[in-house]
Image 1 (cartoon, one colour):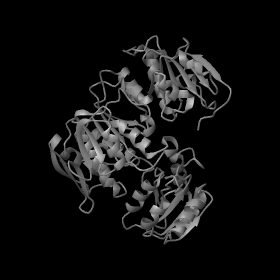
Image 2 (cartoon, rainbow, N blue to C red):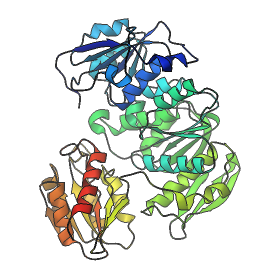
Image 3 (tube, rainbow, N blue to C red):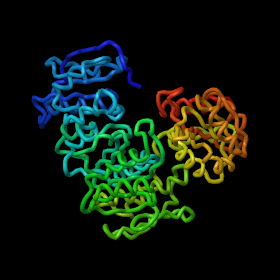
Image 4 (tube, one colour):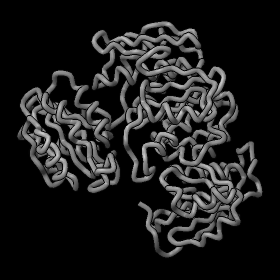
Amino acid sequence: MLATSGRSLILEREFRPKIEASIPKHDLQGQSVAIVGLRKSGVAAAKLALARGASVLALDQNETLKPLEQTLLNVKDGRLKTILGCFDHELFDEADLIVVSPGVALENYCLASLLQSGKRVISELDFAAEVLPRCTKVLAVTGTNGKSTVATFAGQMLNHSNIRTFVGGNLGIPLSEAAFECLLSPQEPYQAAVVEVSSYQLEIPNKFFSPSVSVILNLTPDHLERHKSMTNYSTIKCRVLSHLSGRKIAILPMGNPYITDAIASHGNECMFAWIGTYPGIKVDMEQKVANFNVPGIGLLSQLPLDAMKAVGTHNYSNAAIAALSVIGLDVGIDIAAISSTIDRLKAPPHRMQIVHEDGYGVTWVDDSKATNVEATYAGLTGLGEKKAVVLLGGRSKMLDAQGSNGFEHLIEPLKYHRGVVTFGSSGALIQDTLSSYGVAIPCLRAKDLKGAVSLAKNMAKPGDVILLSPACASFDEFINFEHRGKFFQKLAVSMKV
């Protein structure tokens, strides 16, 4: 969370000269670039801007952050200036370009007004995309749930086939890092870039980010505290389709009315493939087979999925979508090549990740990335016949105008499991919701995650799963979902048998 006040901190040093000496392109020489937001994406964008020859004004209202000069090291020519805390908005007048990190809402820093005034304001994603070489095929993956897993699977399929591939964006490494690498080593460009894209990265319409394949996996209520309505949310998500044309492919979920309305305004003349119908992909969950029928790219084939080792039946669909996306990139990979990778696919951390099997025969599964009800629903239904003690809690997300937290939608899948333990700031609310809708299994409440784990261990029986799938944001007790998941993993291995 960004602080709204505090002392300003201004430091000036020089960017590492040995890096600058190897930069072949200085297209921003003599220009001033303001970087707004100095978390991971902002730092990467600042490094890229310096490499492109610009002077950089790095801004963040959080005065507790480390000044950028201490991150990028040793500067003497004054091309880098960091301001933490309060700052004079007139400084933007001197900037030729303003690059916005995804964590910064347009309501902050007067960014919305600057955009309306005609000031050149772009996202970190678009700033990076401007530098990517044309030979790099870009796969963009977005959606409310599953985008990290699909992007990870796609990246693994490409890398296993010896395609030099960058995997990042909203997932792990900012795209600006890939662009920076391309400047440093122009003779060794990425052949493909798999980019997970969040709605925050698409708030500012993009000009340079032009994928060959764009995937929208699904769209359910999330981040409405920032986007205000599902209509706005869907419009923003569908900007990932903005530059699709010709043989470029949009892979979309069948029957989502918000997406249907949003794509109507794009007027795309690209190929459409659908998740759940043809032209597109259908997954037979019982037979564990993906069926592809996309005449536009000459694809009529099947992909066996029974070798999958990733936990959760929903990962059959994730792998199938990743496969279609990779084939759509047209980098020389076919179904046969992808088939040989299925047994090696690994989901990213904190997504139905088995972290421990204890002396009682209880399996501990970390699904901390499930920060909304739909993601938890997928986790619960993906366990097959395994019974779980489910940990729900954190800070719940309001899903509609009436303030419903949506946990009533978990009543049906929960009835097949051992029990529920709620925790955190929304623990009482979740417990009350489940109880009022007649939850059929024991539902206990703990103060925090540590207490919830203790109760779950007493409730679990041999052969059960203890599943952290919170359906809530983590910010009441933890920095982020990764922090929450790592804490759960420590508890899993430290609990005495």
